[in-house]
Image (tube, rainbow, N blue to C red):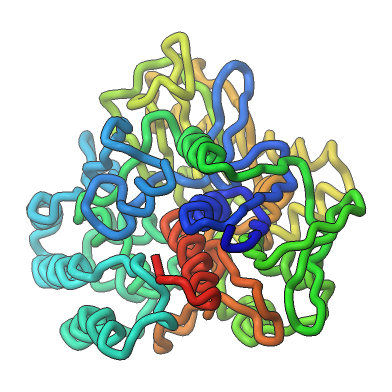
Length: 497
């Protein structure tokens, strides 16, 4: 064996790290506090239906990219994995029909020009920018710190060229949306990102990924995908310790040498890969003994580094919705308030394309409400569990009224399954402030910055998890797991995988 590695956290990043480490000859054990693995890909049963979490699509499932190779290597997908390919990001009501943000760039341009000829210049500019961003590869081969100078130059070249050619810089999505006269186009663009104050870059990255045909949904859901990854890990000889929390990472003379478990046991290892949320890492596992400039800056200035959170309302509808848009954005008849957050949009996702979630002619519908009220929910639940549930039910009732208004055919056929708040995500996934994405830089003038994957002053510990990347997401979570193992291989004087 090349040595023993402990991975803390059994989500996508932890499982990816585990598989890659086993393939390199390491002995690997994964410790997961929850009773099941999967992390952000969690699903849960309510009233005979399956509720899904905040992940609605994945990149790299059906192309020949480095990311696709990662998904195949870790067992997440193979040639027989069925997918629903998103042919549009979202739709918006437009009279008696809908306007679509199509995945096909030519169809998108035609759709928007037909909708709003007076926005021709702005539409053509948007299409031009999407085409620029389409050429940017997802950096999934190896981390920048392990590249030779020529590799770095080649890797950076597409981004430098895109920066040079792009005319959309240093502005928020809200500022950019004002360039369009059509309110429908403005609504569609604003609905894509979790907060309109975010950089235009985030919008263009998401749109270009969609227009590359690179956004898919596994028909059996993301939790089943992580189960396949778990089976691959076990088949290679890995060990899993579910419902086994790590209390502390043991540091001796500046080197990570093992972990102390919640039950008091001590496990000695050669390397540690924590894939947990950064607040858990620094405040709990490292007992506030270490400081990191990257994360410290983000903790200290939350107004500059948004952590997108949401409330999810899962519903069962006794109706066939297959002929309706799978993702519809609507403006609420009456604003919905979550404490101080005014919610004006509903994003209605339905899963009629998969029978995995609901049976008996029912359709799973999930409504997404973007908000930043973790502290409110935490205080409310601490003060009164009854009131916490009442507030969730009140939100659900208003949501159901709005859906019945948008889709009259669903009237009287909607059953509430569950309301998951940011507190839910924090409780089950230990995610910082209940966020489903990593830190998003609100400084639009600054370049994108990622974490270097290690903490100064600690040897033999390499970080995984979406939090080491700006904005994060399931794809970057997987990449981070691979990168952590590559850094170990480099330190172990082994060839980089």
